Image 1: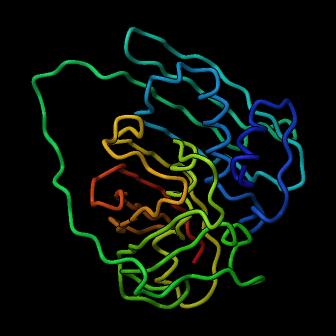
Image 2: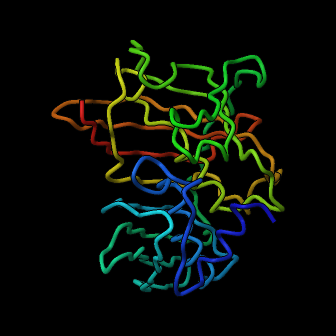
Image 3: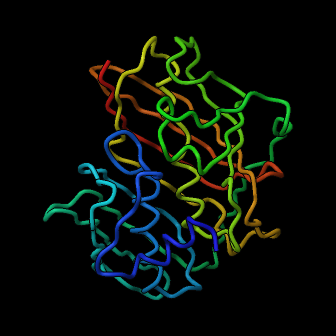
Length: 265
């Protein structure tokens, strides 16, 4: 069992504490908080009903080495769709809130598929490495390979950021919780445009699963590299709006992601 999978197994506990190796500035890596909250909901949901969308609000800092708990509330459960709300609670306040929508396949006359695209080859591009004191602590758990855009705080002229990512430590399986963490691990696209280090924070994040993992023709393996392609759609008044597409290694569109980011620069 990998370190990440061990953390997911704790989602059912009444008190959870995560060490600083998963830190992101003064808080825990948001993708981990969201993934653990999701895992709590997934544990209590029909395992055969695929995840269709996840809405996340980062309401405050989730502190490392400080106990937190995860509450859940069933909002609706129909013949084909379930919606469940989850809250990460720490020090008597909500720090992360998620709402997951699970949906079975349904017969439909509408069938529109995104075409596969040809992706850049893996292994020939610069990589973002973990450097203690310079990169967020959680970066040590992932590998990033840049294909478009530049590293954070490089005064880049680009509005796009794209590349490959996977867990540095492969686990036993690849689940929806793994996917959630991987998608959120990339640095916010806007950071490359800054000349010097400045804080930023994700406020809201909406994720849509275009191809549920359980319905893929070729299941993703634990060490799968995914391709992430994000673009700044607008930035003003201290807020940045980004959109991203996530692809499987064969160029199949896997998920769509939108974020609202506050940047203090």
